[in-house]
Length: 313
Figure 1 (cartoon, one colour):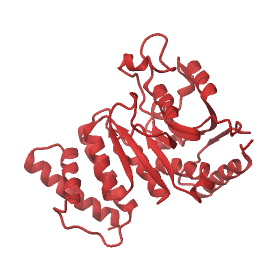
Figure 2: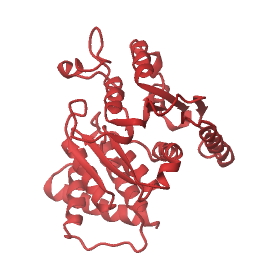
Figure 3: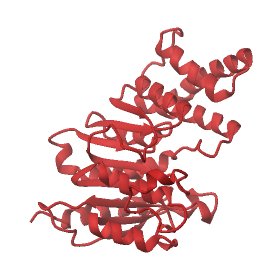
Figure 4: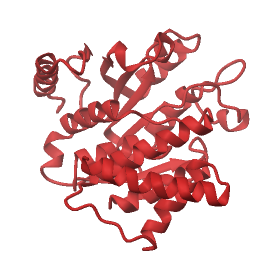
């Protein structure tokens, strides 16, 4: 067995036992397993296991639990998307990462899989904060962060209200898609809909830029049809006034169960007087992930785009 499979077997067996004995659902039993492990109640070690082995094992267990509970807000950003986002974070902060750690915020943390994938990929170069309103999800994220020993500070609150986090160098966010129910809070946003309910995914973009430093970046997993909706014109105007579009990356169709679920990556940079707009917006499509040669060419194209895009005034 691979190391992450050994860890998963340990986590899963204990969670199944707790679920059976205490008549809990699997996700709650999984949380208890992770917290009991942190408290030292289980003697457990897999020789040579890495942070990525641990993250993957916990992710598989959480996915199993989510399939059983089937709550609409219980969804996880797949590893493949997290790794592509990690690559773009690394490219956009290439020079800074050689000199200092960068700060990242995820305002729609969930169980933390996207954020922890990025943190593991940029090992030791990132400090992070996450915001999540769901109690079970944020406790799972907290336990995962402790077990993989990543420096993350978590806040349980509605991410569209005033946040306690400091402005960060970067935001990573798998945007929650749909209408935002709290119309009173939505009124504080430029992207509040003129009529009817506002789109949560639009408000999350605005809130993310509120908590991004000038010249910092936002890396968003967006619905593929984001710029085709009835409120798209308002979103365009908002972005034009506050940020520069750096890249729109189409993701492979085969990563999604249907066309309605397809996503792209939108990279924004918060405007800064010290910088100028990018010379060229990167518009590209990620090739099939199993085609290594095409993937290598894609990442080389990204590297060349970043090198030619000097924004200093």
